[in-house]
Image 1: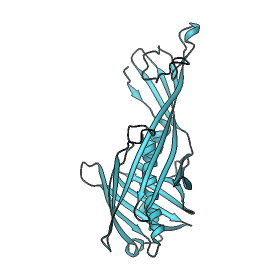
Image 2: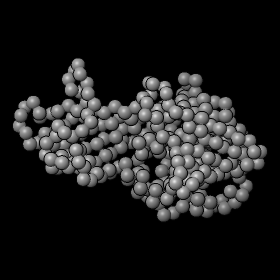
Image 3: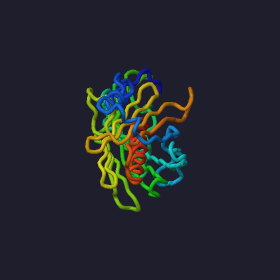
Image 4: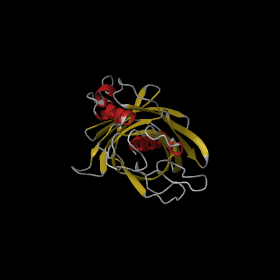
Length: 291
């Protein structure tokens, strides 16, 4: 199969919003609070560009990825261990427009028969004018071991991608992809639900991707912006800024991010733990949109 061009509507619509926004999130958040960074407790961060393991969520063999966080004042170092597994299931069918053979009006993509399921892997069974409609169901499990409060979280969620592939000629196809919103991930500790993270469909007026995270009875409103590989993430509680993350690539060509987290002074250790856990969850959720 040869594909001459691919258009991805909703997926890139989301990414373009926070990748190309002209106004920096820091200018907006510090306009009414210019001394936030000076008064804040500062932490240095180094972490990988986390990505899901190719193994399924049932195999439990995900690679361990480490977020290293250092308290600049105390010099204490906190390694946060993260494991991320994903599994994709696809269902769909091909709608045939050119052939009138009864057996090919609908060609099931996911099932080759009731007894012999198969995964659709190419468009070789399609003829000119055919349209394949596919739903990719991507399941995610993110395990977070947080040394700030010695808690272990299991975060699970699902992202649904809807793809349409049109066979234009014998060798070319045209593909569009949409994402189903809202996207919801649930947070568990020892099998008990302790929170939820949600992304709603963004609007054109948004300067950053907005994620609402409820964790341990705290509602945190997070905004996530990435411009030219520089990442800025703000967290607010009850309309007040409680944390701001400012990161960039660790090197010119790098698989890691580095930077600083500025945390409002006087917060409890448990609150600080929830802030870092929320940042990691948001990083994984944005990654889930890209994957």
